[in-house]
Image 1 (cartoon, one colour):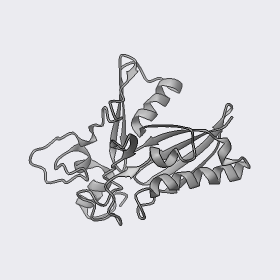
Image 2: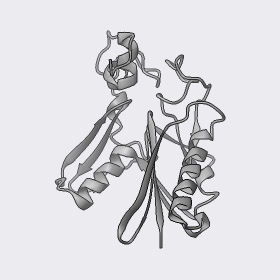
Image 3: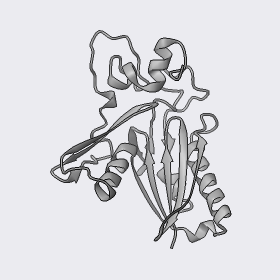
Image 4: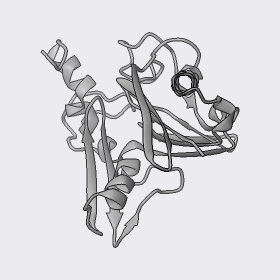
Length: 210
C-alpha cells in the first residue's frame, strides 16, 4: 500500500510518496501564486501524479493523503481550507502577490482524488513527527520561522489542534501596540508582521536573503 504526503508553504511545496518501508520519492516546486483559488490544491495533486509516474504506480491506487500546510485554517461548507497571508493577495498587505485570493479550498479539492485526507498546520504536523520519531518531550513547542511564523504546542503529551486546527498559531499574536508593521491577516504589530520572512523583507525594501 502506498500513501502520499503534501507540504504547502508560502514559498515552496513538497510532495512525498511512501510505502511501509519509508519514503520512496520526494519532489519540490515553488508554490504557485496566481490563478484560481483552487490552484494550490491542484498543484499538489499534479505533483503527486508526477511522483506516481516516476514510480510507475497508478495515482488512483493511493487512497490516503496527509497534508501539512501553512495557515490559518477555516471551515467553509464543512470543508477545511486555508487563508494564508503570505499567499492570498486579497488580504491586507497583499500588494506584492499576483492574485485576489482570500480563501484557498483544500479538503474539498483533494477529496476528489483521495478517500482519506488529513490536514494539519505544518508546525503541528512537524511536532507529530518529532514526537513519533524524535525526542520531543511531553511539554514542548515547535517553531517555524520562514516565510511566515508558526507554532505547534504539546501539553502533557497531548498535541493541541483546536476546533479548526489553529491552536497555538501564535504568529498572529500582537506584540506591539505602536508598530506600523502590517501583517497579511490585518494586524499591525503581530509577530509575523514584524519579523516573518516575507514581511521583514518588505520592511527592508529588499529580499530577506539579501
